[in-house]
Length: 153
Length: 350
Image (tube, rainbow over the protein chains, first blue to last red):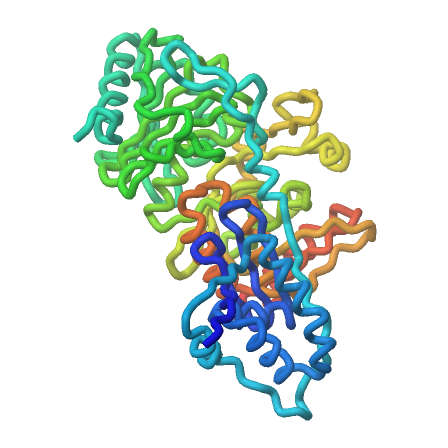
């Protein structure tokens, strides 16, 4: 059996909260935080459970009104962006297909499927900037550090 | 217990403080009611008294027999008493100031690099230390928001969140003003000083984690950049330093200048997210809990990075409990408190 990479949210480095169709996520290692809405939030809930890319694309197709090529064309770059930001990891696990079978997303009836829009990751870096504190430059006689310039307050 | 353990270093700090007290001709004590807790400040001498207490005068209270937290405060310059050498290496300093190996379930240890301030607190005993080399080195921003290294971790351990938000309201209820720096929190909070609303915070406040959610004032200072001062000339005239250095904010000590307008606590009724617009009118628009969480996240998680995970979840619980709105802040500042007041008095308590 070929094991496909299982995509999942990067725990425990990344923390997130889901509110209906919105998600707020924080990457604790970088200080960046993110908001995801609608399609992006739906994909996040799938990733929080862990799934292969194939299974994820299938779930998106069952929920939204869009062709498979269109979904593939927009979701793949989105997943790559999530991985680039360190929000999602890809792990090779035995039995990856078993894991994807446990996805709890429910397919929408065809008539009720909303139009699919490109999933978007909104990134905020103001917290990251505040973490860019002056490096330690000197140490005094007692061993305590000091900085030449002031920290950002 | 190794010589480099938090226990040992804490004990050494205690010995150094008592030496500083013995060396001083005038040890002092003050007590403050902070988020419902009696907190005693013990000063080895008078050098740091004004620097540390000026922003919290509005919370001063009568002495108590058994305070929940005692913070021992001294400087080496006036007491001629050094602190023990650090028992950790340079790689132990986290960018936020926490000292990695000396921050445990029981102890929090931090060093503010820019100001050269050490803070350490034993959460179990309710005892903390706050040290700076010299009173002359206390930066204006530290006097405006003192003791954070000791207060925030202790309050966090006592179900009280330090939150990066402004707060205004009435004794019956009020709102948090959430958003990153520069989003209009200070201008909005200060615009309320000339209205029937009361001022609780412009930048940092406390919220308990019990029901009902209650907002508490911590610092009575207000900080404004030059453009904000120009928009609020009545506040500019109160600034402690009328001409702050380039890029720095002017500081107003409202506990001294507008004590009657300060409200020390109120029940939380809503979270408003200020957004500066170029329209004259100020308006409210519904916002999602996710928008409020996002607005609160940036500054708040930085206040206590080692507890970021727990704080984030506590914030998410909070934004689910109260309604959230965008406050589209208009150029007519007089309208801002009117809109907030109307919401609080006309159905805001539903």
